[in-house]
Amino acid sequence: MKNIKCKLIILLCTVSLSTCMDFDPFGGSGLTLLPDSVLFASSFSQYNEFLNESAVVDENFTEAKLNIKLNNIKKMTVSTADEQKQKDAIIRNLENAIDISKDSTKRAELFQQAEMVKRLGKNIKEAAEKWCDSVGQSSYLNDYDWEYNLVVDNQINAWCMPGGKIVVYTGILPVTQNEDALATVMGHEVAHALHNHGNQRVSMSLLLQLGLTAASITTQALGANQEATALVIGGLNMASTLGVVLPFSRDNESESDKTGLYLMAIAGYNPEESVPFWQRMAKLGSGTPEFLSTHPSSDNRQKNLQKLIPEARKRAVKLKIDSIKESIPKNKRIDELNGK
Image 1: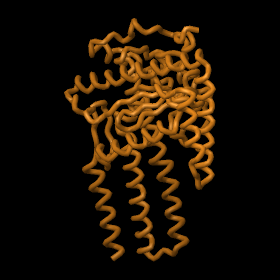
Image 2: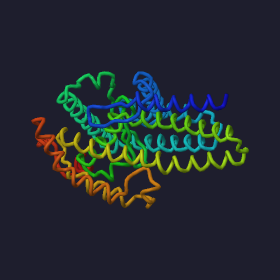
Image 3: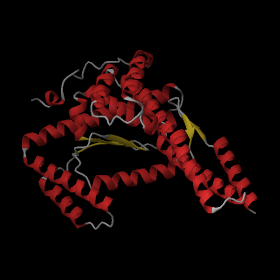
Image 4: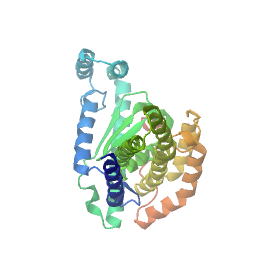
């Protein structure tokens, strides 16, 4: 009976790997087990939940409405230390946002930054659409529901959920320093979504769990005791993390760097700004060795981007788009864009 279970699990793994490879218009491929309809519905729901708990810079960014949101968050019950930590962070962000909302100058500057995020997001979206049109796959983005929001949060971060839901944190703006560098960030994050990296990671996790289950059943079927089985599974867990999960993530990051660079150039931004941006980011890095990191080393990332810049410009020209938008001020700090 156990032998039959092992064969069945191995067969399921083989069938999954041979039939679920997803190829996208942006040149990527990967294993995806979940349909977009399921993934996008979950993504959109989580995004709305996040916005309801965050200091979003929109028409509701007023002292009164932010206070209502803050009071609602304070009433929320939590059951774990991690949930309490997250709640405390949300409260700090909302309190900071309330202070900003009281200062008309700071509030106006923040709204200008939010407009920049929306403008940039729209330009990146249109670049993705032009790319899809150029390869005859204009329907690829039909189910996307694009949205771009700036959120008051000191984290140096930005992200794009499956289906085109984007968030930029105010904490990353001092690092980007100009609109072209922010295009580097948003192009990279959008590329993750366009390549279905979220779906691929979930799918890979499901298959790894399936493989570990098969290994456990096999070792027990061969007569191994519980301690020996645990040792084998532990070793496989470590091997899968170092040999599959981390390189898989690094590949995702490198792929998104490349596609993101092309997208920003097609959208009309200067791809040269990608290198100094990542140099600034490197100064904030953790120093984790590359083989133990989910991201490429900063040096490798910068070298790869430098090599890709000429191709990014060629792609922009190929689509008959000026690779530098004359209407956008170049190399100006965000505070200059805000009129300081």
